Length: 363
Image (tube, rainbow, N blue to C red; front, side, top):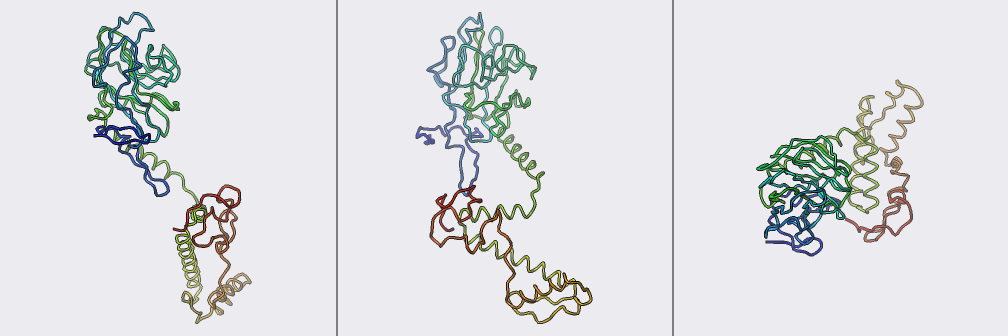
């Protein structure tokens, strides 16, 4: 089976274990599925060098060169780059034969990468090499990273888009972050460089040795924990919510928010009055009691002024509405007529400029 991706091309639906094909994200009430992006699903058998041959399934490859010098490497990449709008893209390679020297490599490389070189030897390429377990990028010396690997091992490579970081796995074990802040448009790539080396690639059509989906869940938990460490003042959050609703013209929601806010203010006033021995007025009604005795005992012009304001509100005179966020006009003025289009009357909430912004209609 297959499905159409964003470019209208057939996308294999058999990549059931690929985490980037099953993740979902929500933005402004719209669901975006990673599966709509083109996913690497097979090896590019058109542009590979002559030192390797690919199987008909386009997921297995064998080295047939001699491996005598640094420019007779047989590297091959996938038909598409890693998707950019997903939490994690991951693939694995199983070593079918380590050949004479086990000069294998797995990693990611840019579109301009030379396929006659090992991933990691050239700029914009990143590799984990089998013979020494070192990680390489734009260097032939490499750095200490993980264990060496060979025949029978399953080695994986993952790209975390949020941090643009690359990690590798060996037989299901996460080896740690190898590279950070890597560029976009990287292709899954493997390199072979000694006679009879052979690997088979898994892009998600079969279960991975590494728990890729579990790793995605762990990344999300870590992100939520980091967000929870940063506490924003309640007033700031309320202002941001009001500005958002005003900008997108969600009139009913904004009206309900303001109504609940006023009710909460009245509850606070009532609780404060009860603490001074006052009898609070019912919402929307007329006060049947005064706090003159209690306020006289408390004394002070401030208490009398506050009592006068509360008596005025109880008799139907509403207090001034609190200042809107971001110095916007009062809500009764800024809301456009129902059915009107436009970005709202608060230029600061839109980031500057007058009308004519995004319109959303009333919700």
